Image 1 (cartoon, rainbow, N blue to C red):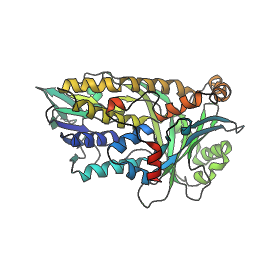
Image 2 (image 1 turned 120 degrees about the vertical axis):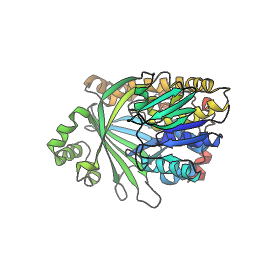
Image 3 (image 1 turned 90 degrees about the horizontal axis):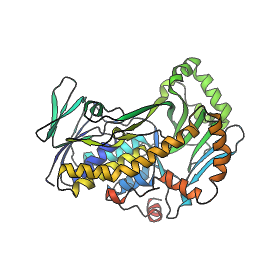
Image 4 (image 1 turned 60 degrees about the vertical axis):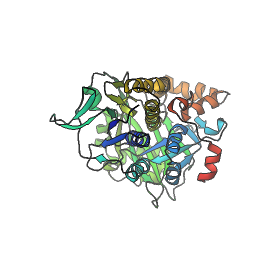
Length: 414
């Protein structure tokens, strides 16, 4: 395929990774970002073997491991009885896989620094409203209708509430989820916690509290933990009005050991309310535009796949274009390469979410007793580990990737 002029809307992980892959493949790329200064949004996330493999392919493994925190298991317990109801261990699978919890700022900076180091242009402070294709070129328009860029291909990496999807001929299926979460990034040095686990406490499915040690936001910084508490987003203002101390007292009642984290929260402004939606854009492309990351597909965060899926999209798109005879063929190949993996994990997320965020007492009872028991019987531990890893089906081959050799990498990154 000829060298393409590519405009990438959105300088988040998906857009930055796509820029690196495509520039290295010989294409001319330009990133367009609505914020005056590109920056991460959110607290922490869990990089799975899928996303870590993509970063390794970009040569960024050492950089992200320097900042991140290795996670070996996901552990959840009933807040009242203390009974373990979730225990997913990566070592249930052979090969030495693990997760890496990272602050969003760390993931952003590793990718952004690589983009800057390679001299790739980033235009900031530009809001995009529409993509319009004419005579095999796609123009990006701002809200005033002015053309801000003209390309052979536009990549929409602007996220779950993309305006470009809404303005295109593609009609995404969107289902807003009633449950979200308050998130905060807090210091964890000197606080007793399981440094190798995502730890959670539940009261039925109406209360979910979690602590994820995410390492450092930047080199030389202190170690941080992402703290989260789920709730119905419609109730968020009521919770705020009841007062911060009442909210904190409720959490301490469910999980007293979180008190040193809660003591750091002195203002609601320290908490970010995350809202979630199931979104599917089919097909994930139209004339002259292709969607990656949350603009193509988003889910609830229960399986921790969002950023990992976005990085896989970037790799798969670059791989599809590299072996296609035409742009149209490449976009169709990208959609085919990601279809089964995306659909499977969207389905799994849809199925699992009510077990952890819902009003159902029956589902919570089933989770705490039947599911928790079955999860200990082989091959259930292996299946759960594969689900969390993002590897229940192989996502690598069709993205042109080879999975890392995890045991060797763990030794190098130690």
